[in-house]
Image (cartoon, rainbow, N blue to C red; front, top):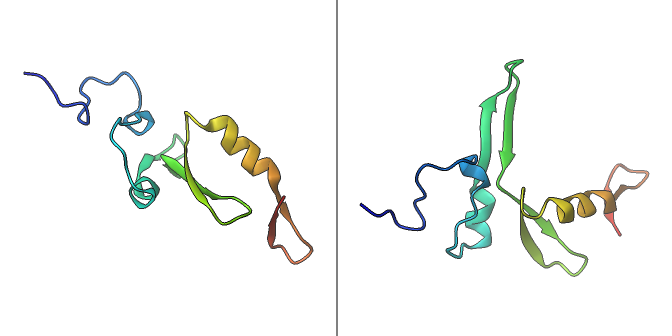
Length: 90
């Protein structure tokens, strides 16, 4: 029995790390969770599959937590907080 591409079987990676070939809307990507478990200290850990970022012109983009990790790091480094505690993006 063959499986369909969007239903991978016997993954050797975390299912949340899998990037499906089919296109998804920004909203669908925003709802995906890669990890939702308690760690060894029983602290709840929830990691999104995609981080939704917005550029200076208001365009939103979904960055995959594994495939786009370097770009996510760049976005985080750009974040600054002003004297009121509000984030400013440069």
